[in-house]
Image (cartoon, rainbow, N blue to C red; front, top):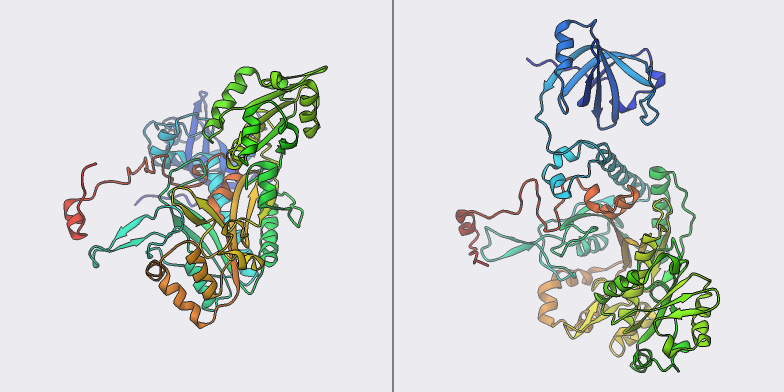
Length: 589
């Protein structure tokens, strides 16, 4: 029968106060060094690393076993904590070491294909293929621990606010919520499919109808969409819904939650109330509905300064009801060369921009890519809009409003990053409110819900939903941190007639409404409380709190950019027998 050394302490938790204590440790060997009569071994568990010393005064059997240790061997050690002669100030345990008295080898290890250290610089594909090794890194364990604490804070806080945690179904009816559904074939109902939930939206609203009053859930969600750094096919939300609340009630409860999160996890004080920006102001000032407030470079409208110019690119755009706007990059003239500006121009073509006009503010004059169309006085009037200083670089984009916003919104944050202005320790939270209820889709030739079709319009805008749907504002709100949307929500429609009106504005037929939402609308016959809620992207929140750049760094077993699990090789082909049971035929691509 295998012997187990019953652990008394975690490796990374030992400190000066523990000197003289007898301890039992278990973990993985980080490295081993033989200095003749002494063998030093760094032992690691999820809390950190501690130095173990094996002396040749031990039994020869145990000393020889210590000499045989290699990286990633799993061992148990009994010993006494002692003052370390050579202090390592880079380690929390660097003032002590453990003088080993006994040793047990639990298992050996082959040479790992990746180094188990934070700065290994190995490719992400290899990290994901051997994720169980990658997770041994202390940085990854810290990320998982912070994510765990975030979930615990959420459960504890919302419990104290009267929320009930309720699980909602994973196998649901397909519904249109923006992205593609993942479909699951039913074996017992041939030819029919479940969908995996993109969110628990309708179920949490039904819980409000059911009298739950306040609901929360750490909810798994699924969306079949193209991936990027902050997206995964399966992700997690802190999902919330409340009855008998208005927008101010929802935001006030969430602000106190965020204050607690930042205090307990980062020891950062968040001043309340958080600032609020309307969607229109956010777009006009920052070119984005998730503005980063850590730096300036705000957008300015230049129509008045350029409308009478001889530069037809600007005047033609203005005559077509487009926009001419710019940003002032403080100190950018010295930082960015003409070659850099050419790269910027290419980067914004992906947003539909046809070009980029620049002005460099010098000591005595302003140089520009359009100098032959503008006098020095004209260029000075443009610079005055930004209150530009010597060595500033002004960048101007013209075109459709969405093109201008997207281009300059991208440029301001991209250039700020290149100039080192994105401080991960500077947390700028804000609410973006008063979103448009609808947005027109050229592809579908109709209006689509900006958030989802259950979002309530502003009461004062209900009368114009039929006549001027593009001007209707929503009772919706997003919480934004440093240019990233942490979460969003809205006050919901609780009136059956208004909900049906919303569906009609979206040009859904009565058959479509009944087929997709019949059970939901039926519930509205039986008394519906006013309600609203919000959902946080747990992965995104954890990513920012951990100061990571990708949500894959805070998810234990994520998919890669191709939605594949590199470790298990999912998804895989089904067998002919499985397909036959499901009445599915797979055709070659």
